[in-house]
Amino acid sequence: METTGSAATPVRSPTPTLTVRPLSPAIGAEIIGVDLRDDIDDLLAQVMLDAWHQHLVILLRDQKLSEDDQVRFAERFGPPAKIHTQQFVRSHPAVMLISNIREDGKPIGALPDGEMQFHTDQCHQKIPAKASMLYAIEVPSVGGNTLFANAYLAYETLPADIKRRIAGRKALNAYDYDTAATIRKSEVPPGAPCYAHPVVRTHPATGRKALYVNRLMTRRIEELDPAESEELLTFLFNHQEQPRFIYEHLWRPGDILMWDNRCTLHARTDFSAGERRLLRRITILGEKPV
Ligand code: SIN
Image (cartoon, rainbow, N blue to C red; front, top):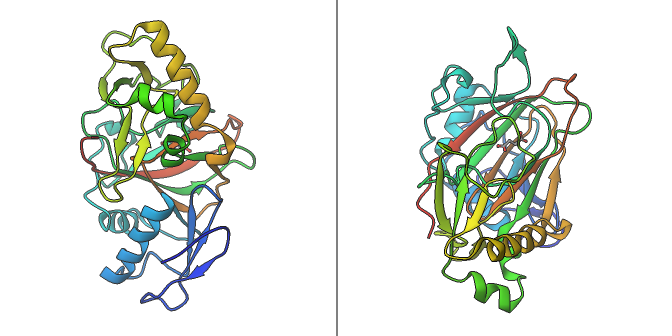
């Protein structure tokens, strides 16, 4: 399957009208012509997997999905992870709400408010999720967009001396942003979950190398003095967040989008606290980054 530039490409598949349309030069593709309530047979699942590996983010629009439909779709890519924050789970143990809607003053979903800096899901854990999937139910009229950056391109376009300086290094990632997802810290607060992963990881399916640090969660590069670590990380963050590597998704209700945490980063733009935002999230179990 070839999808280059911005041209939409028809794909040989069990769904005769299925098309894969790139969303930007760097990352993302829309799959057109599939209703995820229908059976997803092996051939269709393979076409979607190939498109996902090639474009890193896949989008399907105008879907009308129950929780069970969304779980069934997720399961075609691997086992969904059980959610540990029980208060955000609805009926299925793998489905979590992302929402700013409050009931009795408390958000019904995780990551409720405003802007979020670039990050990758669960990079503070030993075995982060390989994929995350969001299904949009209610979205604000302006903002709350999700940006995706291509971490393969970020790595491949680094200057040779920077590649040399990060080769074989690990960086410590921490999770402490329940309420402040826009403030980068270089220290890990006591008790915050954290884990050190390779700064450059290799994707197990494509064999490509991706830059695996991010502004929100990466605190330091191990075995460097703090000033050098901070200088290098600042360079890497500014490099990987360049517009040429990014697709910005403006949500519509009925959108379902799945990204690959092994080779992408994502961020969120600000939105009004006076407007409702409600998405259903599933993450899919991954492997230890190497
Ligand atoms: C996330 O970081 O998983 C949430 C992204 C979003 O709410 O757009």
